[in-house]
Image (cartoon, rainbow, N blue to C red; front, side, top):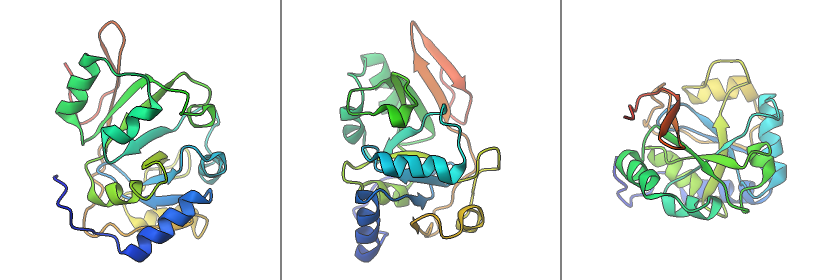
Length: 201
C-alpha cells in the first residue's frame, strides 16, 4: 500500500485524536493485522491507561509503531546495516523488530527491558492516527482484554471496552486481516521470536 497524500480521517477527528493523545488518553484503530490501542509513548498516564484497560500484566512490554521509520529512530539505538536492510525490505508490513531502545523510550513502555519492538503497519488509517501523536509514534498493543481474542472490527473493540477508550476510529473499508506480525531480533544472526506472515531467512 502506498501513501497517496489523500486524507482519510476528517480534520475534526485528527484534532480530537491529537488532543486525546496530548492529554494522556487512549485511541483505538485498525492495522494490517488486528485492531490496536495506542497512547503517546512519552506520556506515562496514557501508557498506564492501556495496561488498565486491557488488564495487562505489567511485565509485558508495549511496542512502538509509526507511519515512518524516521519517526521511530529517536526511540532506538542506531540500527545496524543488517537490521536496516530487513526493515527496508519488509516495511510497511507485518514485521516487528526487537532492538535496543534509546533513553527517549521509557521503562513504563518496555516494562524495564532495554529493548523495544518497532513496527510500521501497512494501513493508511493507522498512519493518519499515528501522525496525530505529538511525537508521531504510538505505544501500542492489540485492542482486546488480555487472554481474549484480538479485535478484528470496531464492534469488537467497543464490546471489550465500551466508552472507556477515548476515541475509536472507523476502518473506512481498510480491514484488519487477522494475521500475526513476525517478531525478529538480530543477535549473532536472526532469531524469529514469533513466526508470522513474513518469512525471514
